[in-house]
Image 1 (cartoon, rainbow, N blue to C red):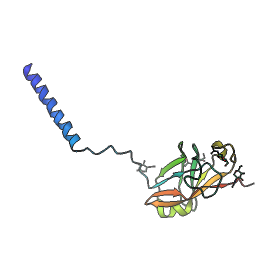
Image 2 (cartoon, rainbow, N blue to C red; image 1 turned 90 degrees about the vertical axis):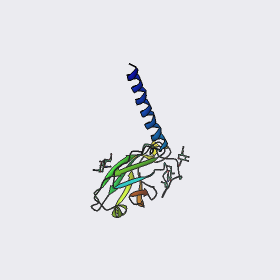
Image 3 (tube, helix red, strand yellow; image 1 turned 120 degrees about the vertical axis):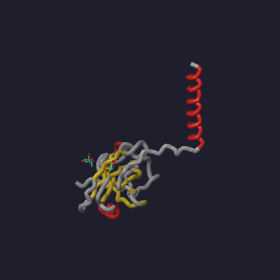
Image 4 (spheres, helix red, strand yellow; image 1 turned 60 degrees about the vertical axis):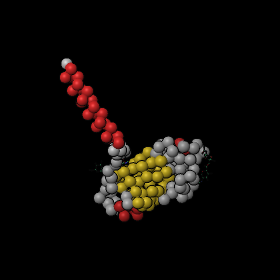
Length: 150
Ligand SMILES: *[C@@H]1O[C@H](CO)[C@@H](O)[C@H](O)[C@H]1NC(C)=O
Ligand SMILES: *[C@@H]1O[C@H](CO)[C@@H](O)[C@H](O)[C@H]1NC(C)=O
Ligand SMILES: *[C@@H]1O[C@H](CO)[C@@H](O)[C@H](O)[C@H]1NC(C)=O
Ligand SMILES: *[C@@H]1O[C@H](CO)[C@@H](O)[C@H](O)[C@H]1NC(C)=O
């Protein structure tokens, strides 16, 4: 009995020392989950029917479906939905060279502007080209309202 409890205290002491040394060594902070992707497109969708709009030009368009549409063999497609502040982020794997993505792809929002502001048009789309920000991260050039063709 006495031996067992002494051994138990010894074990607790060892664990205590191990925990203390991990804390003292400054264990690395927990990393946010990393997305594995070749291309990331992220940005802000404004709730407005202006042209070349950037961040701050209007309140964010929450719940807008943003589609990445590409042409000319750039075989890419992705959708993302904006958060409550109008921000979106999409990640995709591709064999297309990131350098050719900007020239062949655009962002299209089909979600009616009227859904974020009833005074705005109930049809038409928001469209934006994209530009490379850093190695594989693209940003919208600025969304513009495009009225439906009749
Ligand atoms: C994106 O959404 C559109 C419209 O809902 C749909 O037609 C298209 O297939 C979707 N694309 C992807 C890659 O999910
Ligand atoms: C990209 O491919 C990697 C490796 O196959 C995979 O782990 C990751 O989930 C993929 N990412 C996307 C956004 O499809
Ligand atoms: C809705 O849009 C109108 C016209 O663009 C604008 O004057 C108004 O400030 C907008 N309302 C909100 C809540 O953003
Ligand atoms: C934006 O919407 C308002 C309200 O419908 C309209 O008066 C205005 O002409 C629109 N502007 C553009 C650029 O479509």
